[in-house]
Length: 62
Ligand SMILES: [Zn+2]
Figure 1 (cartoon, rainbow, N blue to C red):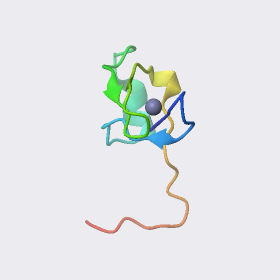
Figure 2: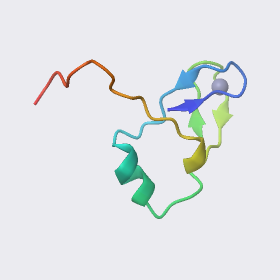
Figure 3: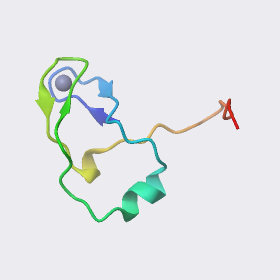
């Protein structure tokens, strides 16, 4: 997830992986995503990414 700079809402980046895996990726600049909150294209970097913490909800599948 990244935080939309226009609306402040968290938007999904399309990356479905854990923070550790993500951290190991040799990429810095990500492709822009179209923000579902404001419908603008946002460029984002790895350091901008926010990972949802699975606090209490157990994994539903698998
Ligand atoms: Zn946005």
